[in-house]
Image (cartoon, rainbow, N blue to C red):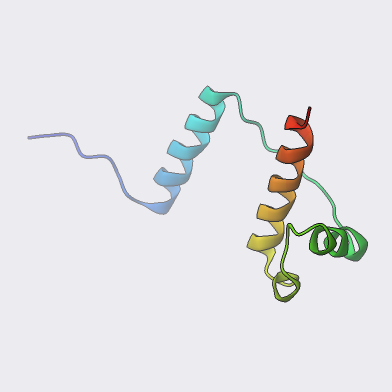
Length: 72
């Protein structure tokens, strides 16, 4: 009998959490207001129709920070 990993959502979240910890990735909370969201649109990180899509806003913020932190 082979051991099978759980596919429950909680187990998957824990696996991803442990993987990020091993890679040295840590979560941070960033507050962003309407002006910040507008800046992400203006800079091309977020499409105008995505302003209310929180997943897209999060992705835009991560992309922006990554670009800024990795800029020469």
